[in-house]
Structures are given as structure tokens and as C-alpha cells.
Amino acid sequence: MLRSQQSDEGRRALGALVAFSRLVTHSATPEEILAGLARAVAAEVDVAAAAVLEVTPDGGSRLAAAAGLPDELAGFLVSEELVGSELGDALLTALDGAFERAETIPLVSGGDVFGSLVLLHRSARGLGPEALVLVEGLVDLAAAGLASAARYAELARSYTQLRDSRAALERGERLRALGQMAAGISHDLRNILYPLSLHLQFLRRCVSKEAVDAQDSIAQMQGVLKRGLETLEALRSFSHQAPSGRPEAVELDRMVREAIGIGRARAKSSVSYRIVEDLHAPPPVTVAASECVSALVNLLVNAIDAMPTGGTITLSTGESGGGSWVRVADDGPGMSPEVQHKVFEPFFTTKGDEGTGLGLAMVYAFARRSGGRVDLETAPGAGAAFTLWFPRAAS
Image (cartoon, rainbow, N blue to C red; front, side):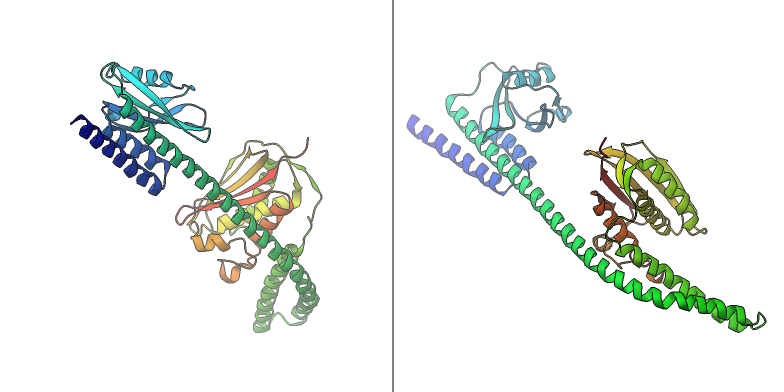
């Protein structure tokens, strides 16, 4: 009879391990693994409660999953680095005498500690040897699953970084090729449009002011020509592969204030908007000041144009990651994923005939030339925020 009972317990323990191994294999997140461990332990062994604590980035412990514990313990956090019985004692203290004994088993795999399983008892009696073997088996499976999840997350991050780096390299190559093509086109167009502009000015002076229709026709042609010359100037600026100014140590706060002055003058006067400055004097960066101001003006004017009914634009500065950043954020309609994917591509525009599609491409090229980057945060209905980040200037 005893041998039959032991055989049944062995089969039950094996079944529990197999079932939990399936859960670990198919779980997509560490949270699912930790919650499954707490449930499995509470169901398979004689404990009053089971708590799974995960290691926090600062070395403390946070309650990640539990079975048999009151809801008010959710979010339980131990800020200091406690291990073994010390962690169990801290949990007993937090439970204010509801349990008498705590047994702690670490979740370790490959030398990495992911957390601890704490078994809580209402008496001083702990687990028997057979039950302890089962729990340790469940803990080992959970730790192995957490290690696999961590490796998968790291691989996913590495793949994302590789994909982004490849996309940036391809975009940079396209920009260089387009820049060379744009330089040749802009040279030829200048030779055509500038003489035409002079001839129109001469023709307008020669035509009598009483010839209203002729004067209007010439004025319309001059307007079209002016637009063409503006596009040509943007094309010429885009074709520059080297900085148009001498790189120097500049303060981003000063660049922001200059850009606001220029941007206000260039923006449509019919748009009602408010500009908020949130400047924190980050360390200087080494960039061509004229290009930096031009990039910020581009971002500022784009933000104003994105809010035809008005809104708020916030220009902020700060420091992070060994560099300084400047951000231009609006509370406009935001961008769809399709637009966001193409927004830095040369000649892509959402402004129809009013846009050249070169402004953001030039901002991107400037950031890359300066050893920095430009990031975009946006979503439909949530506005858009462009952040320029540059390495800190050498002291």
C-alpha cells in the first residue's frame, strides 16, 4: 500500500513537472513564467502561500506573482539587497504574523539570479524531502525559462539595433547619391531661372501700369518663379555633403532662441499658436551653428504648419547618454505609421504643392554629419516630437 502511494505521488510530481515545462516552453513573457510557478507550487505541495519575487534593476526584490497572499501585498518591494532567509524574514514581517515560517529558494540559471521563491507556512514545519525535490525542479524549470526569455529579449534588441543601423546606412547612401544628383540639377536650373527672373523684372517695368491684365500675368509668373527659386535653394542646400559652416562648440539654448525668432517670421501669420520654452542649459555640443539653427527653424515651421487651427509647440533641451539634446514637440494631429516611416525621405511631403520634401531630409543629414541623430515620437492624434541629439563637445 505504501509503495503504491509513493508511486502515485511520483507520477503526480512527474506530471506537475511536465505540465509546468510545457507552460515555460510556450510562455512568451517572464511574467507568465513567474505567475505559473506560484500557481504550480501552491497546487502541488502543502504550503499556505507561495510568493515569487523578481530582482529589480537596483538589486532589490519586487513581488511579481503570488498564490494565497492578500491583495494588499501587491507591489511589495524590498529596496535593499537581501538573499535567502533574510528575504523570507522581510516578507514575514510585511505579513504581520499571518505566517510562522518562510522557506526561500533562489531562481538561478547559468550564474544569473532572476529572483526567489518564498514558501510560507502557518506552522514551524517546513516541506518534506520529496516535496522539496519537486519544488526545486519547478524552480529550475522556471529559472531556465527566464534565462531563455532574457536571451530572446537581448537577441530581439540586437536585431532591432542591426535593422535600424542598416536602414540608417542605406538612407545615408541614398542621401549622398541624391545629393550629388541634386547638385548637378540645381546648377542647371539656376542658369535657367535666374536670367528668367531678371527678364520678368525688366518686362514688368516696360509694361504700362494701365495694362492691368499684363501686369497681373507678369506678377503671377513672378510668383511661380519665386516658388521655383525657393525650391532650387532648398535643393542646393540639400546637395551639400559637408557642413556649410565651421563646427564649433555651441549652446543649444541659444540655438533655440535664435530659431524661434526666425521661425516666427517665416511661419504663416494666420495660424494662432503658442511657443513654450523648457530649456535646461545642457553642455555645449560641436556643430555648425548656422546649420543647427536652420534645422530647428525647419522643425519649428513644420510644427506650426501641422497645426492649422493652432496649438502649442514646446522647445526643450537637456542632456543624456554623454550628449545634449533639443526637442521640438507639437500637439497637432500626429502622423500615421506610413508617414512616420517615410518622413525623412528626400522629396516626401504631406504639404502637397506647398512643400519641397527636403526640409526633414536636410535635418536628418545635418544630424548625421554632426555625429548625432534625430528621433521621432508620434502617433495619430498624439502630436509629434522631433529630438536632435549630439555628442558633448570636448572640454
